Image 1 (tube, rainbow, N blue to C red):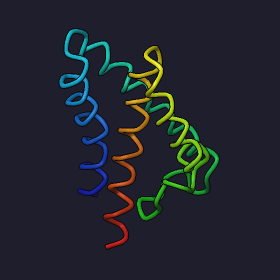
Image 2: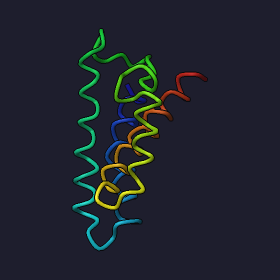
Image 3: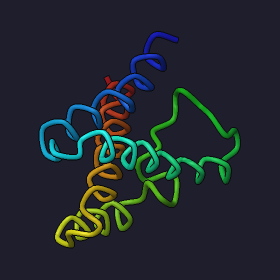
Length: 104
């Protein structure tokens, strides 16, 4: 339960920190856009069970796949997509940290 709480808090706080550090003139808007990228978790609806605290989502869910993550990284190069791409990559990093925790 504690790991899930920390994971969810990281999904809120890490984008806030990144928005404040890298998009300061419009950090609040950047943070809201990054929070909207949490919609990437809709791909969990394709899994059974939808939520499994013992499952690593990276490489399991379609929008959490390595090709998708590579596409998010490429999107960083395009200014109009930069905030969305940053939000998606931060999301993958937070999920990846959870995968590391599960492997220990």
